[in-house]
Length: 305
Image 1 (cartoon, helix red, strand yellow):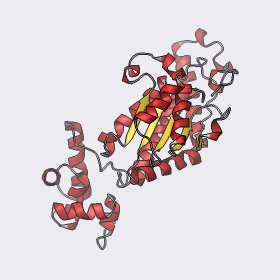
Image 2: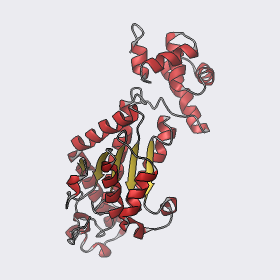
Image 3: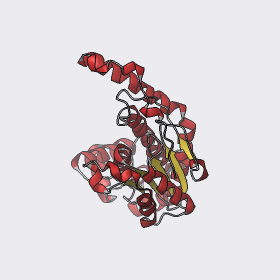
């Protein structure tokens, strides 16, 4: 699993920042903002590839599989961040979207950069989680060369899981032999050469947002543009859940709150009960029959949409 000696695209010299150390704060910020715009444009250019990852992730979760992110350093932290936000936002179990970072959880706060060179540890991380054909493993490596990530992807493919590499450099070497899909937002050289926490990190976060959120939308975790599978685990989220029930259910907030409590905190069950005028058990059964999609469950009732 040798890597090329030439610098990756993100590590090359950026002429736009050649005299960056001589700029004032205002000019620095403008330069940063202009470069960040390139990150957004780069993710638009790979939208079709990202869409395929969305479809794969949704299909996997629908079949009881998982989406697993694997990364090192900044890439690993971004994967763990995205995974950790899925349970409260979309009501999925914490085991559904999993973030794996080289060096373990300690690397979230303290640099463990040497861990990225351990391909065997990447293999072990996949084996420890018993990855199978039902899963999708998305490796994150701005350079496309991180040995920990490539080791994990090779092992994932060996276990018949779908393997995806998110990088900001075109594929190189023999990686095509064991990676099914490449998502490659080409952001170009960084303002601070090699610091992939900048444009590359921004593009990575954007793509991860798209993959996880897109998959959850396909799974019926969103109704319209509302996060109806939100878990009311704190005061802010409870207020949001009550507002959702009242708004979609067409009732006042007090009625919405009572319905939410009676439905065990399940926004979709509460809404369906209100809209169909049925008990909460019947609403829950109807929702299950519709695959968890509130829209489909409502459409099963004449005149609803």
